[in-house]
Length: 334
Image 1 (cartoon, rainbow, N blue to C red):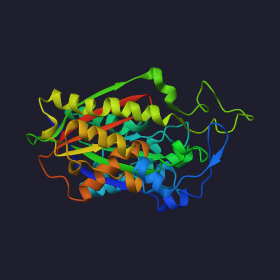
Image 2 (cartoon, rainbow, N blue to C red):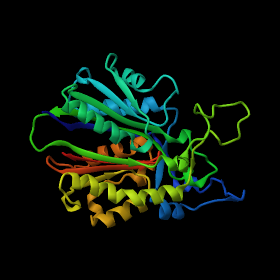
Image 3 (cartoon, helix red, strand yellow):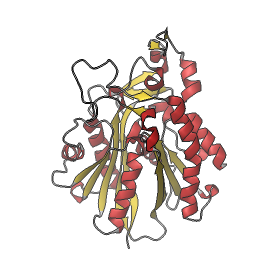
């Protein structure tokens, strides 16, 4: 039975850099209606972020297509060899139709099937797991998996909890069938807590609360309880990694590289400490990108590849958590 390996990666970040010094000039509003500012030093201390990228007219599909093209080029295959496109995003260009076929078109893949995974920050790893099973079943040979989000489209510039954290970007990988022993996708574990969905959601725009002309300001923007999300991350991050490892009768010290969702440096550091891993085994891009949603993990993966941090046979763990609330952890042998 074939297995699935990552043959090539790619990523795209918009050229506009929004530094913490720029954010210092922004005016935020507290829950009591009081206005205030934050300093660049406070931002770094609380988030670990130095800058984030904002789209300058690029749509989500534009960014996704560019990352996809890079991944295909990195895989050293012809675009016609791609059998399937999977796209993870929370910020589609349009509610209808879904974005994956449009992204495939922009890449130049005009006849391949293309599916959307709209599962927020965990979506790309979920698409990776699904693609691996497709390849194991022999249905496809080369699958392009893209994570892309234009998070600047949903942040509330008056609310510090979202305005400081999020950025725009896209990441991608080509998953290819292999018969090589001891390489490829191993397994994944996942979980969720739908009771807490309102800890991170956009109130307006869905079928339960459609847009109306006189909607309350800000209802179309992200509402997030940052403390609750950080608490959820701390609860499940290390546990999720350990559960994935235990399925393969492995322990944290067997890991060569951990590639986490880039949402909170504090959460990542707490998990790494609980796992007794050195930070040298963690791929971090948070300081340069902010939280890019579904693009977070594939961007970090691509940067790790370009920095020469992965070698054949390395054991890697990809871990993400976010809206839903949901989490997923996956293991691959590089």
